[in-house]
Length: 222
Image 1 (cartoon, rainbow, N blue to C red):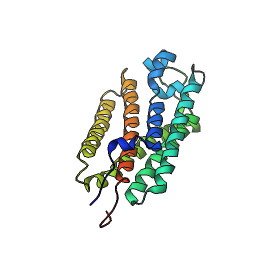
Image 2: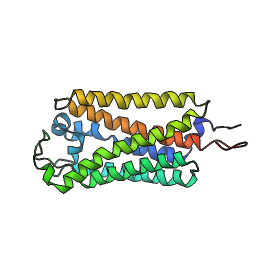
Image 3: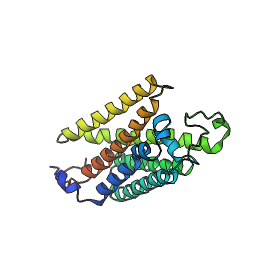
Image 4: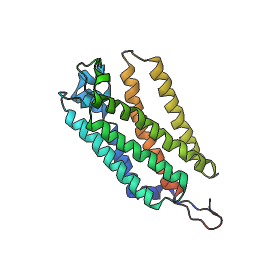
């Protein structure tokens, strides 16, 4: 028989609070509407960190702090992880955190608020930022998918399964909206919402890993 800890006991764990802080810091884009409304209304959230933009240092610092907190969570969870799929899931969101830090340290510098960057193909730093921004959500999605098998194997986790399905649906909807709104004025709003979905995905991944590791094995190993 496998016995799980109560959900309220998860709130007592440092990793839960750390990932909550990381998720909140990573979704700093709403501050742009207060501190830099020109970019917030007309460009991508990553341009809030561009050189010369007001308070760019703050948005860079928030991303770096978010990545640092998430890396700490990954180290703490890795130390007690025994399942291979769980370790791979942790490794995936650690990669996400590392790439977020890289993207913050190499900001997306465009000459205009509209995001028209004709020299992007000739700028190694901008290519690094672009690759980090593309690969990081893929790594985060991989972290969620790797948890799917572990969730399916445990019947009591009906709520976790429902949350997992909803998160995947959100990812799909944002992807559809992003393609439909490509090169339209409201494209940046879709991508901003995607940042918040990534934050929510971080919370779900870490909480599920923590929940899965909380049960005690008394019979056969899972």
